[in-house]
Image (cartoon, rainbow, N blue to C red; front, side):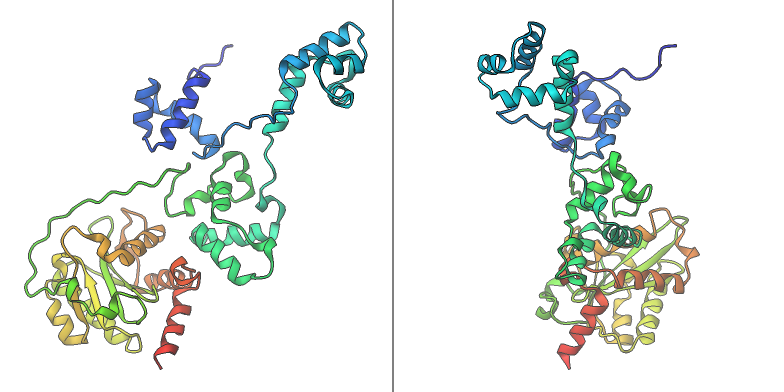
Length: 387
């Protein structure tokens, strides 16, 4: 019985799919261009994990198909190796190896020999993680703790500074994760541990969605923030925001600009009164943690900011409207937190103890901006410098 399914795309259209994908087009845009369903586009990209590798080209010295056909005709005419070599301008040893590798003088076929050479040329080398099980276990265990490939690669150089066998680039980790044919090296669906939970690799796209913000009375602008908060050398300058979950749930996220240390605060609701109480109590529970300033967005949940300042001594500043990049540390940290608390998660189910555990996981993850040290290590180093 004939197999029912989507018809395959011609090679020209397959190449066009990859060209459009590399340019950053979506599945829908590509499918409209090649006039095929998005599923057909996905089926082309999926085996390679969305990673394009150019087709291997034969070296100039490789035998061409036309030369192999001449060898086949020469064998049929009982020509000697030297005669065929002279006619083709090749060394006799080249002709001899070609025939020996392809079933000998009696069964040599030009098409079969050429196909075999093409397959061998396309055969990929073993990946570094295939060769080193210790390195594989290290990478796998950190991925499952939601470390990024860049964090893993950077931390390996700190943990094994003299052992190059335990060094690997973040790009090599990404390729091992996404390449469908070699994914068996790592646990099944390990891509779900990455920040972007996707089965294939996408290009980088940046977008900003603006939100309307009401006016906050006596709000101090981020431009009035102390200069020492800008260069990230002094502990105690924090950025904050809310993460919104399903069923109208939320938590507050705080991150120190210098050490990248994270603190998560459980919230029953997002009212200004409740947030003021929660942040003030959290501050009194952690008297040893340095806290000088807090930068927030224009959300009305912090409308009672002056009460927080009076209760804790922490000066509060507000970013400009529609300017999330002014709190880039916090925005990036929220992306990390979403690995543990995906969108639409009912955040009210998480106790403060649960949130403290997630914060500890983040505070023991190496960060590129810290030279692949962890926020806790950076905090200890920063405190030592201020003594």
